[in-house]
Length: 115
Length: 112
Image 1 (cartoon, rainbow over the protein chains, first blue to last red):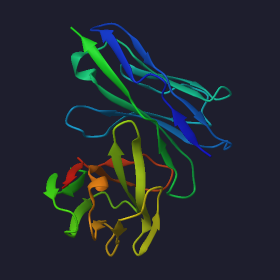
Image 2 (image 1 turned 60 degrees about the vertical axis):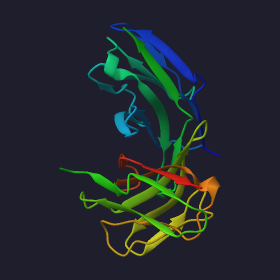
Image 3 (image 1 turned 120 degrees about the vertical axis):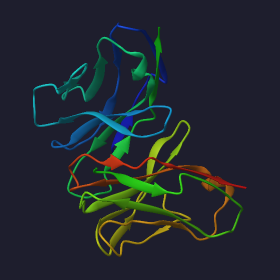
């Protein structure tokens, strides 16, 4: 069974500092996709970054980057130069094909940014 | 603007009163899904649709129905809502099974 685990229910970071959110997953598949979604107080689900498992290079989007360790089944999110607007719930998600019933979410990490 | 819309955004109802939450996307996506979000449980898939007239159960389908008569619309139907269906509901769509899912703004439902 595919599962996604986020072991940090809550994290905090000082403004302008760097924080890393952890995510591990369990799968027997070799080809899959990993995502980080952000959910601010508005409750909207916003895609932050995605990683294809077949790519060795870690994905980067501006201040957001991932550390993808395929052998360890680990997919952590690093937020650099944290801003107040980064405060939100962050969900790690895993997806594999070809069926549509295949997007699995972790339980989320609530990130607080301290001014 | 490419988006997924849901209506209503907030709904308070009573047990047993049928309701429908609409979902529409303007990106010509084939794949659409419904999720519910509950504290400590993350998002769980209710139903999904791979194309028009093709729907299937997700992880928590009990008490829900869906239909996909048009590509852009994927309504969620609660025939007889119960208090345990109080939750935050999200509709999502994607171009194909492996692509990024785009989420609607969410519908907060309270069943009394």
